[in-house]
Image 1 (cartoon, rainbow, N blue to C red):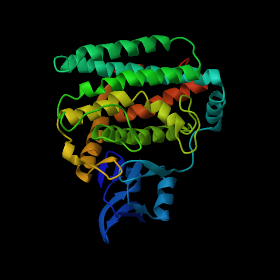
Image 2: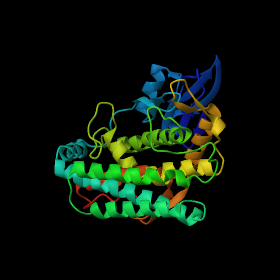
Image 3: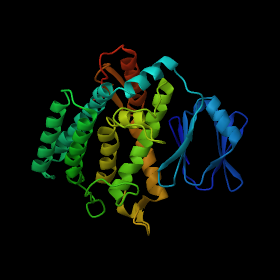
Length: 343
């Protein structure tokens, strides 16, 4: 178990969480290992065989602390949330726009613009930092491809066309992602995106970071009063947090992908930290998972300047800031949604 900022990650298998007065207590094999005041937490993320008492879950919900349950390998299973905050008018506006094909396409283009611009920035940064070590021509071609799609996003197009363009952009981006891995090539090779289950260490690492990111973005949307399940680029599907997936698109390249590259290129994760199961799925061991969790939370503390608000803030606050900006757009206070653009 590990606490970072206001989020408690519970990775020790067999842990039992319960309410002890006004604290959250953790017990492992009849020994209480930790007590934390509820008011100091914003979220609890439980991996694998971790159980919690109903009294604790109710107490967390009453105090606005979300509790998420993931498989031991990081696949999201369920979460417990308190009463929905925000006003009903905001959600009604969200639902109306989600039912409008033209409005959904326009909003989807905002999310895609952020995703593609930040993916292009990641590739440009790789050329700047490792231009002599990587296949610069191939990376440059991918940058050009993303630029072409960004230009097209400035024009009207149907949602299906935008989603098709996203697929082509992802093919270009992930097609050169292996070139960005400049160390540990014997352990880390990337031949394309795969998931459910991930079939190699790189995809295992990316999928795990995406799950953590989705948890944080979903919590930010809930806090803002938006419905994380009703998206625009990602359409309704039972159990899928469509809007959370929409909003996290702009964070994937510069936050999750860059963090994965840093962990691999600086040797903070090793190939021996991953193992292949009989099913072919690749999973990370406990030590590697803790290393990734620590790096994830430390990265959230890095301070950046928001290009739209012109204010400096920790990266971890960007999720809430972008959710608020999106809510302002839905209310009509902003003409468009300004995705966070990393430079």
